[in-house]
Amino acid sequence: MNRRGFWGDVRKYRTLLLMLAPAVLFFLVFAYVPMAGIVLAFKQYNYGGGIFGSPWNGLDNFRFFFESGNAWMVTRNTALYNIAFIIVNNVLQIAAAILLFEAVGKWFRKISQTFMFLPYFISWVVVGAIAYNLFNYDVGTLNVMLTAIGLEPVDIYNTPSYWPFILVLVSAWKTLGYGSVMYLAAITGIDTEMYEAAEIDGANVFQRIFRITIPNLYPTLIILALLAIGNIFRGDFGMFYNMVGNNGLLFSATDVIDTFVFRSLTTSNEIGLSAAAGFYQSVLGFATILLANYAVRKYDKDHALF
Image 1: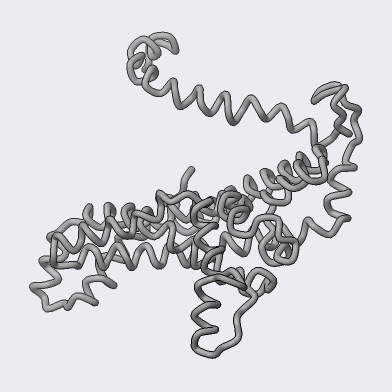
Image 2: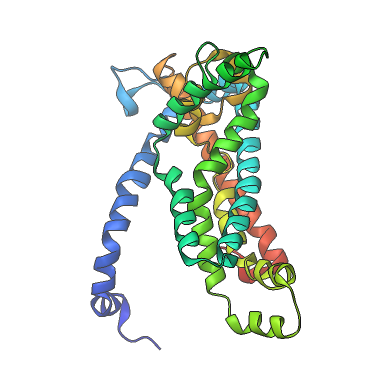
């Protein structure tokens, strides 16, 4: 029985709590305090009244959001892109981690890790500039090469159908190094005696990968997938905005909830509408992580988040 009580525990663990305090303060200031702004989703905002003084308008902001025809489009794009990112990125990251683990040369492994990790530190602004110089219709590298060999140039920035493939490819390229490091750390934690026993029994490298390495990566994969699923309705604003910008011709294939909220604020000055879309996004994300966690608990509760 605990006889110290709450304040006794605080005194005992004061050092650990003090170390935890900056993280708690960060989320309190930047995540919980701003939640008061949710009221904007139910108000007709005006600068004279401010956040709390503007008149209430019920569900009019949500009604306008759904009746405008944008709600389904941005929800579909956000979900489908994130599903593609989760599947493609995790498969490539696991493959890269296994290849690095099985690599014989120590220097080769270190150099490969460095080159794979480098794109993660490149700003999306720089990536957008690189993409523009590659795909520009007049002077882009791709079209210059196509023209040089007698082919017709490709108008990528005016063709929405190309962009799902481009964005998935760029996301995989940028996150490959970071994700593979996490999976590589999980692989190095696997008991080496399992590999030694399998090798003695005559298992080749592919049998060791599919019978030992990959099954032991399931817990890490499930945790990372659950965390990613929690953000399945939250697009990477930096990527979508810097890759596409305000090109209205591409909105049907590239517009996500985050970019829609940004444009509602900066272009249309619809503060109530943007708040409603953001609130809608948060509710979808919360419901998704609960459903995903419930599904994992039904399958194997030891791998669930809570």
